[in-house]
Amino acid sequence: MQNRKNWAVSIIAMLMVASMAACTAAPVAVPDRPIEVSVETALAAQNKAAGLMMGNAEWTEEEFSSLLSVLLEQNSGANNPVEDVNVWFEPNNQVFIRVNLKQGVINGGNTLDLAGTISVENNHVVVDLQQAGAGNMSVTGTVLAPLSAQINSALADPSLGVAVDVSTETGMISVGLGM
Image (cartoon, rainbow, N blue to C red):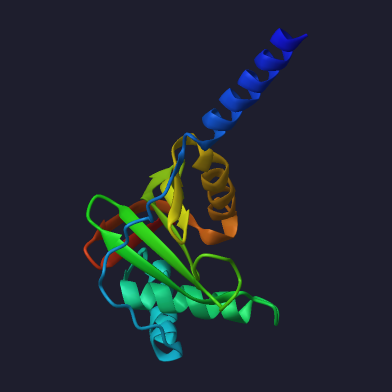
């Protein structure tokens, strides 16, 4: 009987270690460039989005972050826990996202961070997350596949158009749509 109990404890311990294997006690490293979020910048970004009708649009980090933050605020209820969203772009289609939360939403910090790449697959923009974190904890690897899949399902909405190209440089993103 004692031997079975030891096996059960060993199996439970192995399952816990396996589930924690993707966790690390290090935050997601985001660029240190400051991003100022404002309604005026969001309106300028919205005007640039009209350029997608001509086939291509480019946004700076401040424009993209402001547009995303203002849209989130407008489309959320009174209990929206998000202050604003900062998005940084790096070469090779790398993207870093920091969601700044209102005070007291989660313990251990007021930010949620994501790092990954963006590309185009089957004529839709897709995200491949490599790291996600809250405060000083982060996860990597296949644990993020369901989150990437959820984001990609939203990005596959036909009303968003047919993407033919997406590219990033330091501080800038360019998206091209097909007709």
